[in-house]
Length: 477
Ligand SMILES: Cc1cc2nc3c(=O)[nH]c(=O)nc-3n(C[C@H](O)[C@H](O)[C@H](O)COP(=O)(O)O)c2cc1C
Image (cartoon, rainbow, N blue to C red; front, side, top):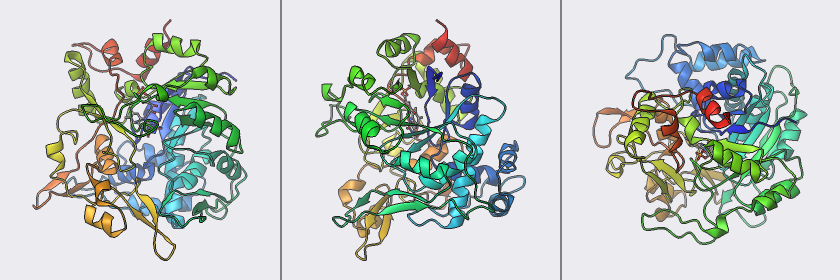
């Protein structure tokens, strides 16, 4: 098989938009959309009136138009919602989603992949996060109905995903274990999804997508290859300088003087050992130069997965003003990227780009009223009756403690769900803490530690670049 040298990494929420993935895929490399909160993105696009019409074009291709019509009736606003009106909410996805919540997940994942695949024959991937378990099953089936070529799963140990892919390929019920805090010993809680009967006819997806887990150690890579009980087609090896969430350092976490988790020799990956597993692999984390690509290939990799450089390209979903200010800042002095050990409610270190007017400024964050209304990063906990409850470390601390969490776990947490929606220009409107003033949620931008490639593609006159320019730069030699 002819594998790509460049994988454009999945970047949630909708930073690796279908526009970006389509551009990369149509040029023969692997473009990847993000499944994270894509149901929310879809309904907000519909509430904005879908001004470019692309969402309704994708929905028209979905195999069950009754399901689509229900979604349009509920969320589509012709001409768009009034600018001062908040977005309508959708149900959060828990362990027992209703059929309509599952349909929303299926349809939105379908639409994102369908759009990324439109008009070319290149391969398109979709990225899921193992930490965000509840939307995966229905979302993956929707992506498979759109013919997704590769399923990529990061942020965790996606050991059961090969089995899930196989089941969905046969249109059979699937399940996997959900991580539950305080679960009774010996009890496994499961999330399940039955693709039968959810649409007017049961559909067997046209093909089985390839599966590439994202791992950060040889141990994890070999567990995935040898113990997942299914097919692992390739591996993405992500190093700690990568954007987004990072795997925590091995052993007890120690912080440097700036308060960031310290990585050491134990976190370095032995590429010979990865190679010995006999699977194609890609390296991720500060590989955005032709020299680093050559280095990766010399180590036996097929190529590299890049995130940051694509996040600032024209086609990404990141708000234009945030791209522009970061690119301009790079021309003077590279902006600081802080690996925040606590910002993410998941507990994984999260890379935060320090730029003005975002939640990277601590004094701004104090003003936000803590609440959880999107819920993608909630954790499951076992209630006294044995059923599951859901709580988020970024929600109001009192509520979190009432649900059995520890107060200290809430310290320093930020509402990533809401701020990542603001990053793509779809932030919710809500009242400022202690006042009637309505404000839009503020962004919180993540990126990798190395922004230097931005300066290779821009200068004081040229302040933007396309995904094609990134590929030309990477593949020129
Ligand atoms: C803005 C941004 C968002 C990201 N979101 C995700 C994500 O949702 N899932 C994931 O597996 N990786 C995510 N990543 C990691 C990228 O897919 C990629 O592996 C990483 O950025 C590579 O390192 P680099 O940023 O140095 O190129 C994200 C990276 C960035 C920059």
